[in-house]
Length: 341
Image 1 (spheres, helix red, strand yellow):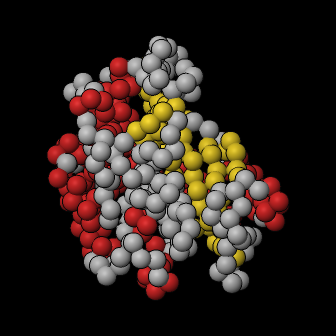
Image 2: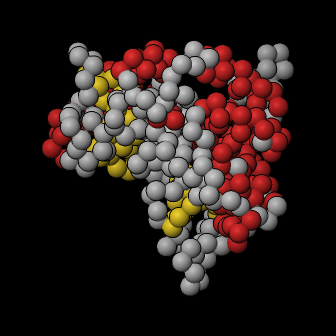
Image 3: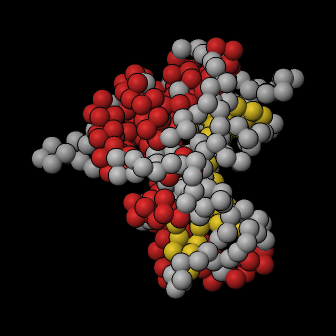
């Protein structure tokens, strides 16, 4: 988006904000390599039921039932320049996971954004609805949008600076520790833009979803999962990012949080990993508004408008919703607001 008459980038445009975050990393000699594990659900348009039931994780047979859609999706993604690595069925009924290959800088987010559009359009051609609403079905798992990222030396892109070839169990470099510490320090505020809907908090604090402001080595139960066993693939995976996210904003805020850790030389023994993540979107939004670093990096205008829009269009209309209760009436109300996500 651009300002009419001047052609200047609109300061609250999330793609522009994300490019600014990437540029900040470039300014300290680092380049961003990122990708996503994207989950969504397929529903039959004729009756609104999941494409398959019950839960069928990694089941090639149920995938064969929707093979025309999957084939068309892969071809459409390829034609649009997207790099799909793998598709498989996930734990939930009708739940699909698609992994994209890592890309540099803003291109990684552009691919994720385009994928959502392509998946929804392709599903319609095959009489399905592709839903990225974080939790659509009572009693089942939610949809994540796990962000995997690493930082590399600028220019030659030969050195993954997260990896340290030492005997420690983490095998994490000093810069990697600083970056991770920044994520942990800002985790509660970061949750607001990584899981930016009332419905997202039906996913958090449940099995296979984050609960604490914590981390672990190859631990799928933590908020930030370290995968540092091999130099080439060393990375941090943020598991608080949900499928309802704005991927530009999620990556931007994650980079800014890590940048704060690098600039302040934060270490893991300086951050509290026992705190709970927010249990509701209003709680997360309050943490976000109180985070002066995000206000500085994302801009006071952006934080103000984010607060206004989310409060007026989501939090207040859903004020009576209790995310610990999963009644059909609650989900019907949320689907009216988030059904087109």
